[in-house]
Image 1 (cartoon, rainbow, N blue to C red):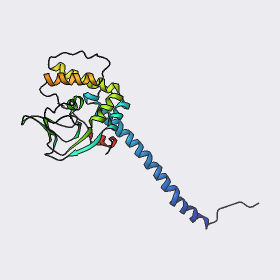
Image 2: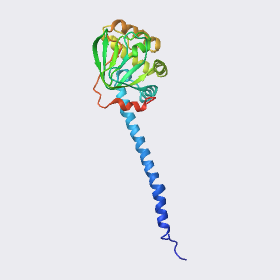
Image 3: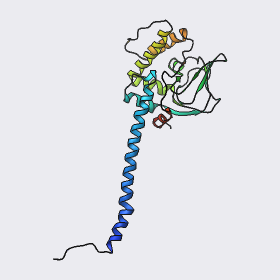
Image 4: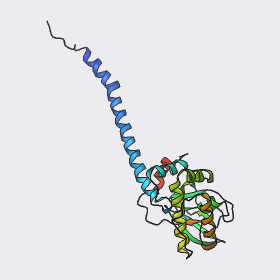
Length: 227
């Protein structure tokens, strides 16, 4: 019996098939794997950045992802007023890029950079804003509306406890001691401590970043709803 071989005419056809289908398929798989690895890296990096914020420092990766998925990404041009003193309720903001200035009664009292956050007091208790916050540069933020924020608090008990722990720390800094081991922490308890902060703190509506931000938090917006 003679050996079975590939004719010289078939070789170009096979080469064309490999070029047309196999090579692109391999490239496609490589790109997908690279993207998945990249997104996994970004998620890990930016969960850590989110965890660096005291308000969320005690949350698990699952809980942090829930916060991110409940947020929306927003941008504000320089000079835009993000929240206005005296307005009732409103959104919670975490700065991911840029800086804002804080004014009370028309006087600038603070400047906040990436990693800072503001708006949680009025959001939780539905009261009035205690300061006006204006974009000093082009600003990006992760924003939670009251419904999304409070739904997240109700869904994730550890978030409620983390918020309570941070608000307790701020209240303790005013000299008004509070038991930080109160359990369970529900929305009513959060509203109560917000009222105490309004009475005792000069600036309950915002919190500066507590540590240098090593990477731009703007990439966190990839995981925010609406980005």
